[in-house]
Length: 253
Image (cartoon, rainbow, N blue to C red; front, top):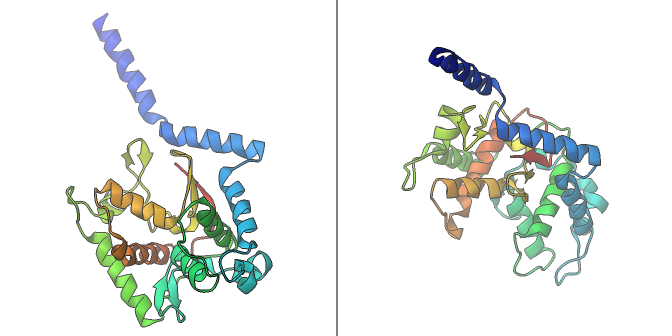
């Protein structure tokens, strides 16, 4: 009898081991349900972002569309080339940083908050590159300098856990951590589907949010003056996604 019980248990656990990641399966089922109902949260936020894009804000009485055309017609394909160097900023900027700069300098918005409205605008702008290939270039000296900083940060071991980005996303890629599969940055073209709706915490996140979240997971809380590091890592990730097709907003666990 004991022999047969052992065999049954072995077969049972073998069957479970062959199943897909339970968390991924739940995510897929929820995404399928939401698609059938026509209410993917990320798409709703992108539509909200379009409305905000055309809405005047700040002391200058301007909207994003005042410079970039109704519904951002002059920004089509822009996200596929970001982060990049901007002459008016004399700096390399990612999507979040560029939007914040525009809102402050050209629209006269004081105290720009990285809230849902802001992230919805960022998501909408990113959708204007959907279907296009990521093509981040390193032609300007400051772009090359920032990329090198991002590459160094990628491999740097930091924090109390003595961890680096590369440990998860290079060495341990495709393995499971907390019931979710760790993505391989280059192979999975990660940057092509952020901003994204995160199913696990029911929130809209930009790539900056994701990078800061990873810092938190590594028990490192970068101060505000460390913002360049977030942009540098964003540039590193986006350059590694070169050739991948932009599909935002993503639907991420």
